[in-house]
Length: 405
Image (cartoon, rainbow, N blue to C red; front, side, top):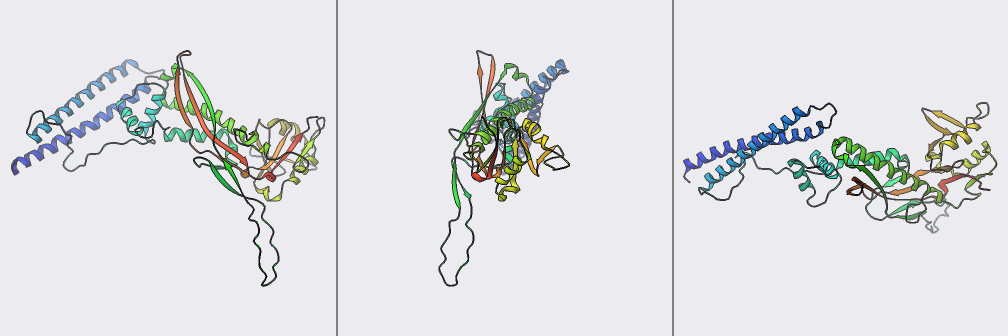
C-alpha cells in the first residue's frame, strides 16, 4: 500500500473506529435502562404499557446499533486486508488503545448478576459479561457490598462480637496470651540474674460451621434486587448472629466454640451463690465484684437477662443508701460497670467479665448458596459462617449463681 493509500486508510479507520465506540456507549446506556425497567415494572403504580413500548423501542435500537457495528467491522477488515472473506479484526481509534472492561466483586454489575443468579432470573448482556469475567477463576464469590452488609448486620445483632478480641485469620490460628507476670525482685550487685517465666500461654482456634437455611416462595423472582438483598442479608445475619452470641456465652468447646460459662468450674473462689429460695442482696453484688481482680476492671461488664436486671438488681436500688443501678442515655450500670442484656443468660444469674479476654476467630466471610425445592416450589438459601472462640483468662470471668437446690 503506497503512502497516499495508507493515509486514506488511516483516516477512514479513525472515522469508523470513532463511530463504533460511540455506538458501543449507546448500547451500554440501553442495557442499563433495560436493567432499570426490570425493577420499575414491579412497582404497584408502574405504567406497564409505557414500559413495554419503551422496552420494544430500546431492543430494536440496540439491534440496529449492533448490526451497524458489525457492518463497520466487516468493512474495515476488507479494506485493511484487501481480501474478501478474510478474518475480521476489531480496530481501535488511532489515538486510543482498546480496553476490555473487567468486573470485580465490588462492581455494581457483578452484584446485580450475583443476586439475579440466586433468584434464578435471566441476566442482561452486561450482567452476563460481569458474571463470566468475575467468576472465571474464583467461582461465584459473594459481592463486596453484600458481604459488608451481612458483616455489619451480624455485628448489629451480636454486639458481643464487638466486645471480644475478634480475629480474621484463615485456617487454624494459635494466639499467644499474656498471663500473670512475675513480680520484680531486688538484685545483689554482680550476682547472676535468673530469667523469670514470661507468663505467655498459647490458645489454638479452629473453625466450626454455623449455618442457617432460609426458605422463600418462588415470588422472590419478582422482587427488586435491593429489596431481595436487604431481606436475604437480614434473615441470614440475624440467625447466624444469634448462634454466635450463644457460643460466646454457652459454647461447650466440643465441636463448637467455648463460651464464658465454661471458663471455670464454678465454686466459692470464682462465683457467688444465691440460695434457691433466697433473693439477691446488695452484699452478694459486692462480693461478686470483689472476686474480680482489679486488673480487669477497666474492661469489665455485667451480662444478664432483662428479667434478671429488673427482678433481682433493680429492687436493690435505694437512693438513700446506695447508687447500685444507674441509668444513662438508655444504658444501665451496676456500681459503674456497664450492663449487657442478653436473654441467653439464665434468669437470676449474671456474669461479671472482661470480654476482651475472650479470643474469637472468623477465618472467612459469610457465604450464601441457593437451590430450588421442587416439592415446595420454593427457593432455599443457605448462609454459612465459620467461627470459634475461647476464654483466654479464667480469672477474668466471675459468675452470680442461682442454686438449683
